[in-house]
Amino acid sequence: MDGASESATTEDWGPFGRPLFDDPSARALSRVGVVDVGSNSVRLVVFDGAARSPAYFFNEKVMAGLGAGLAETGRLNPQGKVRAMEALKRFQHLADAMGIAPLTAVATAAVREAEDGPAFREDVLRETGLRLFVIDGEEEARLSAQGVLLGWPGAQGLVCDIGGSSMELAELRGGKVGRCVSSKLGPQRLKTIKGKKALKAHLSQGLRELGDQIGRDPGRLFLVGGSWRAIARIDMDRRGYPLAVLHEYRMSRKAVYATIEYIETSDIEQLRLRCGLSESRMELVPLAAQVLKHLVRELRPTDIAISSYGIREGLLYEQMPQKLRDRDPLIEACRFAEAKDARMPGFGARLYDFVLPLFTWRGAPDKRLVRAACLLHDVSWRAHPDYRHEVCFDEATRANLGGMTHEERVFLGVALLHRYKNSRDGSPFEDLFGLLEEDDLKQAEILGKALRFGAMLTASENEKMGSLKYFPKKKRLELILAPGTRDLYGEVAEARLKSLASALGEVEIVVKGR
Image (cartoon, rainbow, N blue to C red):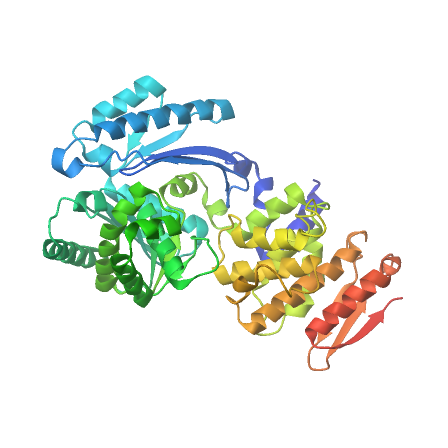
């Protein structure tokens, strides 16, 4: 790319800057393997894609249970060691086959506290060649918080990461990690406490001490860890929540208390099967639920958000220079998808400029959502024409895209649905539409129909696409055709423009330049 073209691209993207993954430092992060050896599970994640918002190229977990019985014996669980070693051998073989060795491998509470932890590390190195780094509780908290920052740049609040043998808290202020503390409040360890009264007293004292150290009233509480995600899945079941995406799922304090009561009064096995949880995970849920109840009661967060990002993502974030960390993960992921899958990569920027005049008024959708929709408007073209609208919606609502609330996912999905289909009547996704207010649904439809019309002008030369002007008070929509685009405005394009005008509220259409 010559200097003039690069400058033009940067200017086109405005505050979003040049696409991140065009930078060599970003490409160097494009595929990274991370192993997390915890008290409950051993997991390998291979990240791939745009560095600022990586996709999960490979993700495998084994519930080894290394920390089971640690509190009583002081040693790693013998069967857990066997299962963990088998998993680590497999992970190393996979890494070699993928060409991503050496893996970055960390171990947390169980290995760092067990008297045979050092011997286990030596066995792992000898049998797999994998160097296992043990991190202390404060570092575990810091990395978990950095994982949250991968998905929520500039996040504020408190991160709580629960494992089997420990629970960590980390403060987030202005996108930076502050105070970090660790405790021995993991559910595997709490099994040794006999009786409800003793457990309640232990949790009350432990959480009170943590509150004194880290502070109370944190604003948002970000929950990291498999036990928290299992409780969130149960909360979804209790509410009949339609979108089964855990990342960015929100709960109120009232909802947490209701779900804990739901767990206490339900048949655990039936609940496990209904929510798709493993036996080993469900075994820890009742204890984890008690920890959460005392945590919420003691710290008094305004709301609770589930983060699917934690230590593993925090390790990736650790490798990023600050200029990469400051980027918008949603826009980077969408930009990467356009470059990889769209028929005409780069058209999304021009389409954004074209449709933006429809969304400049107060109360309009966030411009980053408009930009994301423009970038994704053509990435599903390989799907069967009869189902493209469904594929688009499904991808937007369920894909691994950071930096979006559930409502924003549905907004983006509805916009892309209307990119390929005028009506959403009879859609199999109708239950998800209810997550949006009626006005937001209408705005998503307008955006989708604007994309549907704008896509008719893809054959135009750069900077000759023409423009739209919208006058809400006059109920007037103007299309100014640029030279070279007049022949593109045929009867199909005209029909799509009329559909857009109808979505805007039966506005008058004026076409200039014909």
